[in-house]
Length: 362
Image 1 (spheres, rainbow, N blue to C red):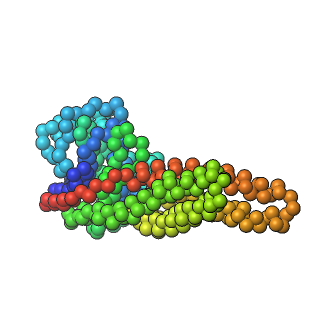
Image 2 (cartoon, rainbow, N blue to C red):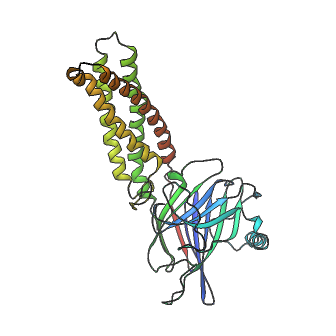
Image 3 (cartoon, helix red, strand yellow):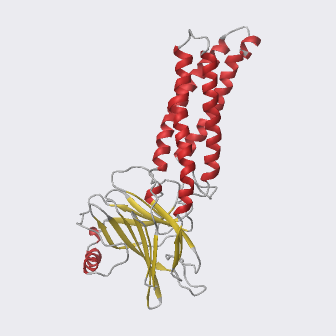
């Protein structure tokens, strides 16, 4: 196979399978239409999510010298590419990226796999480029021998079957998880030269996440603050308790139902994981914590409303403690919720419905 290319307006991934004598190599190129100095690019094998995938992770080197332009998406043999490769081979310090193999986690940069650890193999950076409008990196890895019983250490296993992948990047100056528009995923068969992109799976989730985010922001930026303001500063109004209960009840029911829907639907997508042992995102952890705090608030609020403790205990110490708990937990709840709205917007990121083009050359 001379080349496989999966490309969109902002992202391109290409592969070449080469053979030199009895040895085989996979050469992979990633090209994005943004500048990456201190950012990253990477591709995960074995899954369409980062969790549990085998990641080829390349981190940008901030002090690298920028070029005026970078090559096209497909693996190229033009004079500029050859000169860059020769210069990189002669002087490794000219590399724009530092690459290694690692194990994927949910929006977490895992440490590189050590040479003595299982799953290690070298990623040789043969070409790299950073320009004002694009960045690219090409790595070369050895393929494990096809002969049964051969040594399969320090090499990449290429099955003669569909291999799922996910590719993503983070540009310079953006210290956050990538969103919809900065990733692509699909399946390729490196031996047969076939591949498909499956960005449609993510776009199908976009509507749910947009609804989830819009309703959560309405709850935590409008309904809950309104309920707090009414009960705290409108004590002369006879309807303030009823309004407080109604607003909190609507916000709580919406939050719990949409939180459950998001947790269920997110598993198996680029936001979640099919690996039960993989860590959850910070947004998911905070969201589940919010569900617990909301439950505590509802219970303590109901105790205050019915005065269940005051009727059974003559001393008002416990009742005051419940009031103080309800008050302080409410402040913490709103603070954590506002922070989680921010992390949710970052995690979703902008979504662009790019037209995906697949081309194969053999």
